[in-house]
Image (cartoon, rainbow, N blue to C red; front, side, top):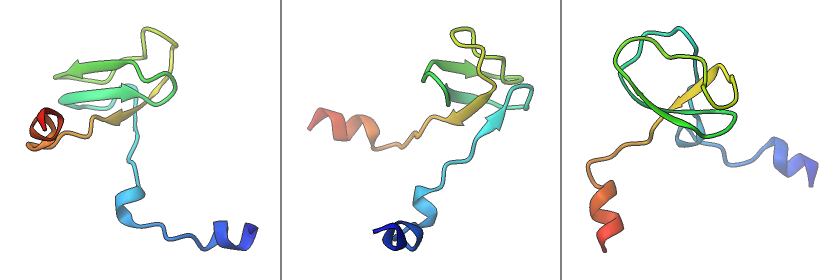
Length: 70
């Protein structure tokens, strides 16, 4: 079973890039620790909810809203 976990079917789609506090960024991000969301147009702050310093970009797609409406 452990062998299967080591050789799983991981793809590039499974990869999530994280950004650190202080990184220049623009857009929506969520704290990797608590999920708090921010919209920034300058630098990523320290999370005001949990003091986390890792952020992941919000997975936006032009079809996200359309999928929710169906």
